[in-house]
Length: 110
Length: 110
DNA sequence: ATCCTATATCGTGAATATACGATAAATGGA
DNA sequence: TCCATTTATCGTATATTCACGATATAGGAT
Image 1: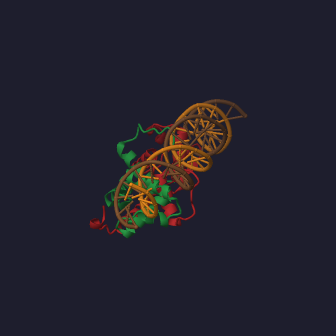
Image 2 (image 1 turned 180 degrees about the horizontal axis):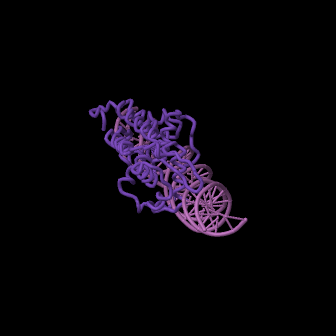
Image 3 (image 1 turned 135 degrees about the vertical axis):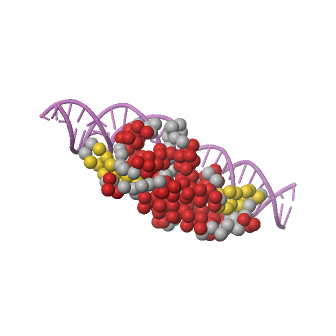
């Protein structure tokens, strides 16, 4: 981005946006899908399934980890990642709250 | 970003990511909230409620419109925007589908 | 017709994001 | 101990995002 106006927005909105932004890349969506499907933790298998270099995948994992969408522990040469369902469903909840609070009066709308 | 690897990802994942990315900024979250609360369509009132210049708000509106999160029509000097609940709940659905397909076996996880 | 108002678009600069190869770090095995 | 393996981090190039002011555009009012 650029000179982000961090000020002037609520903490809640900033958190929501950060989480959404972390989902804002197909590679990270794909990572979450794979992680969710296998349930158990993986690492380099993610690299095989993606059209990206290992270092790039590592960056995406870091981004997902920073917002708490996945958690992971490094165990020597191997890493162990798994989806953090709580964060994911929390985001879903915030979105549906937005939808719920929406009394869409279509007659008044364009 | 940079040289995006559009190839190698499913259309579904790209669409999901695009929608999520559109939500990835506190200003756009705030816009959606305001739009949802008032229900009826607004325009310059959004600018007043945000710590941003008019042109910047217009850019954010365009981003939201491009992914179908809001719809708007220009009516001469005034514009008319409203939340597109369908897109928003579709995103929420995709996310909860991700959560649902998550058989989190914590014993195997880190 | 001319001005006023409200939005969108253009042009620009600065900060981020994305991607890669190369390197560092940490462990297990020879 | 030394090497192979796996992952994270560094350095870098390029593209994109975000923000702003200035300008264009389109009606409505005078």
